Picture 1: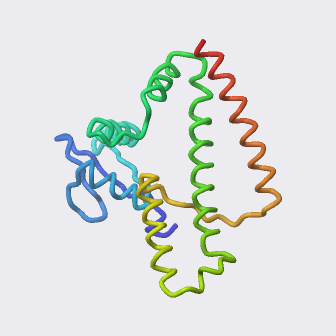
Picture 2: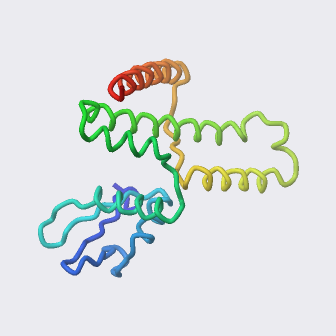
Length: 180
């Protein structure tokens, strides 16, 4: 596995300071958030116990952004998340969220891919600059989520997409019933 594909290892010392093992310096939560927005995975571990603290710190990053007014999650979604921790929906929610974000990344990737494909405007001078601006705008609007570009088989993709949509609709119905 290449260095860029490996998760960045961050060690938390007893003093609660976070240490980037690649750059050999201390980092803040904002530094870690920037690395994630750039598309890199991170793993945060306690130096002494070896416990994986990644989830805890990712939640802290989200909470800090939400409290600063960088709200991405609507109140009703946050309330549903809290409810899911005390209901039978708990087992369904992680798969639902993962599938939703995967669909979002796929849609973003396909949109970016189609912007340059078979487009007569692409031959115009300055099109690359305009396309770069649009990509930057989409990254900003989507909170820096990276696009995935896995090889795709169109027929399988559409069938797989229909199946995911069907499963999402079923999950939404189940969640609606549980919230009543």
